[in-house]
Amino acid sequence: MVGCLLLLLFACLCSSSSLDVLLVSAPFPGHANRLLAIGEELVVRGHNVTFSSLDNWVNLRHKSTERGIRYLSAGKQTVTQAEWNNIISKRASLQGFFSKNPLAIIEELRLLDQSRPLSGIDEIAKYFMNINLKQWDIIVTEHYLLHRIPCIAKSRDVTVVITSMTYFSNESPPWPFPVYQSGYSDNLSFKERAVIGLSTIGWRCLSAFSLHWVLIQSPVTESLCKETFKYPVELGWEVPYIIMTVLGLEYPRTISPLTTYVGPVLSQALLNQHSLPVDLNDWLRNKNNKSVIYISMGSQLSLSDKIAQEIVNGISDTDYHVIWSVGDINKDIILNIDSSRYYTSSWIPQVTLLQHSSISMAILHGGSNGIHESLYFGIPIIVIPGMGDQFDWAVRVSDAGVGLQLLRHEVTSRGLRDSIRRIDNDGYHKRAEKMSVLMKRGGGVKRAAELVEFYGTYGYDHLIPGPIKYKWNWIQYYNVDVYIVLLVGLVAIVMILKRSCKCCTAKKTKTKQN
Ligand SMILES: *[C@@H]1O[C@H](CO)[C@@H](O)[C@H](O)[C@H]1NC(C)=O
Ligand SMILES: *[C@@H]1O[C@H](CO)[C@@H](O)[C@H](O)[C@H]1NC(C)=O
Ligand SMILES: *[C@@H]1O[C@H](CO)[C@@H](O)[C@H](O)[C@H]1NC(C)=O
Image (cartoon, rainbow, N blue to C red; front, side, top):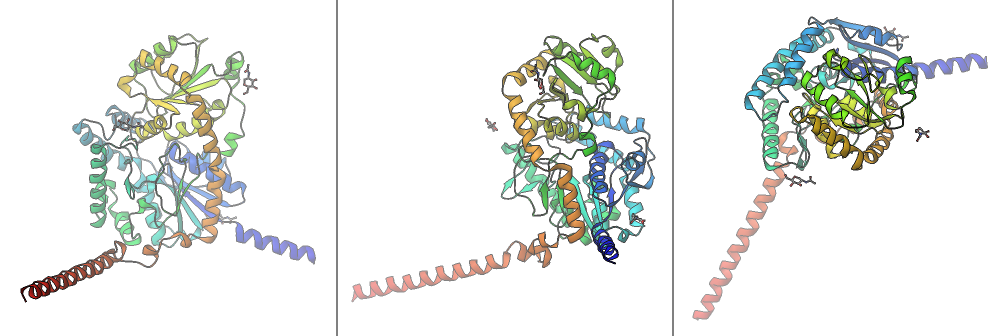
C-alpha cells in the first residue's frame, strides 16, 4: 500500500518534472554542437529531448541518437558540402563585412544574399510553420534562426529560448557598443561610433516599417515577428537569451533582464573523455610541458598555401613542436615538413587535446567554438580571422590580453615568430589562466540546462519589463508626455517670473519718478 503510494508520488513527481524539449538548429556543426551538448545534459536529467534540423553531410541524425536524443528531420538540404564551402571561401577572401573597401561590402551582401537560401534556414521555418508546436513544453533554438523559430513559437504561445554566442543588440544605453561582425574594439573611435549610430538608426527604421526582411530575407516570418514582438526580437526583451561566453572576453554592457551569460557550453561527455588516438598519444609521450603549438584553421575554410607556408617558416625559428588539424589545406606543404616536429591529421579531438599539459598556445581562425574551447583550458591564442564574427572574436581576444590578432596580410614568417615570442614573454599565459577561471565559473552546459528546465517549468513572465507587459505606446516609452508637461510648466514659471519682475521694475521706476 505504502509502496503503491510512493510509486504514485514518484510517478507524479516524474511526470511533473520531465519536460518535452525541442532543440532547433541550423544544419552546421558550430551551431548544432552547442545545442546537442545542452540536449545531452537534459537527457541525463531525465527529459524527453528532440533535435531538429535539415539532413545533410553533417549527419545530425546520428549525432542526436547517439546522445539519446530523438531526431526530427525538417527536410533535406539541397546544397552540397562542396557548394557550401565554395560560398564560405568566397566570403573569406573578402576579409570581412566592414572591410575598408566599399566594393567588398557590396560583394559581401551579394554573397550573403546567395548563401541564405542555400543555408536552408527557410526550409526549417516552413516546416515548423506547419506542425503542432504544443507537443513541446519548451523550444530551444539558436541565433541563426533568430527571425524565424522564436517568432513562430511565440505566435503559437509556446515557451521559447534563444542560445547565442553574443547578445545581438547594437545598443548599450547610454553608450554605443561595437556592432556584430564589425571587428570593432569597445575603445570606439569617432568614425566607428558614427557607423554604429547609422546602422542602429537604419535597423530601427527597417524594424518600424516591417522591412527587416530586406536584410534577413524572410518575408513570411518577418510579419510574424512584427505581430508577436513589441521590440525587435534580437534585443532580447521578450525571450530569454542564453549567451555562451563570459564578460571579460565579451565587453561588459547593460543587458536585458532575460539575458544570462553561462560561459562556453561544452559537452559533458566530451569533457569526461581523456584518451587521445594512439598515434597522437605516442607522438606526445616525449614532449615537454608547454612545448607544442596547436593549429586549427577550421573545417569549412581552407588556408591558402602561402599563409600555410609562412606559418611553417615562422615556427621553424622557434623551439616549438606542432599539432596541426589540417582540414583540407594543400597537403604538399604538410608533406614537406619534418614529421618529428609536426603531427598532422584531418581530425583531432580538440577538447581532449587542449587539456594536455604539452600544449602551450593555439593558432586558430577565430570561430567562436575554437576560441572558447582554447581559453576554457587557459591556452592563449593567435587568431587569424577569415570572415563574419571571427573578426569580432579576434579583437576581443586581443583586448582581453589572452592572445593576438593577425590579419591574413600580416601573416608573414616574421610576424608569426614575433607573435609567438610576445605570447611567451608578455603575460599572455597568466591572463589566459584567469580567463579559464572566469569561463569555468560561468556554469556552462549545466547552467544552460538548468535555465531551460526553469523556463520550461515556470516560464519567464516575471522577467519581462513593464513597457512590454503593459503594452505601453511610444509616447509612454520615451516619456514624451511627461517631458511636454514639465516643459510647459517650466515655460509658465519663467513667464510668470518675467512678468512679475517687469511689474516690479515698472513700479520702482514709477516711485522714482514720483
Ligand atoms: C517524447 O516527445 C515526443 C514528442 O516530441 C512524443 O511523441 C513522445 O511520446 C515523448 N515520449 C515520452 C516518453 O514522453
Ligand atoms: C583607445 O583608442 C585611442 C585611439 O582611438 C588610443 O589612442 C588609445 O591608446 C586606446 N586606448 C587603449 C587603452 O588601448
Ligand atoms: C607537467 O605538467 C603536469 C600536469 O600539469 C605536472 O604534473 C608535471 O609535474 C609537469 N612536468 C614538468 C616536468 O614540469
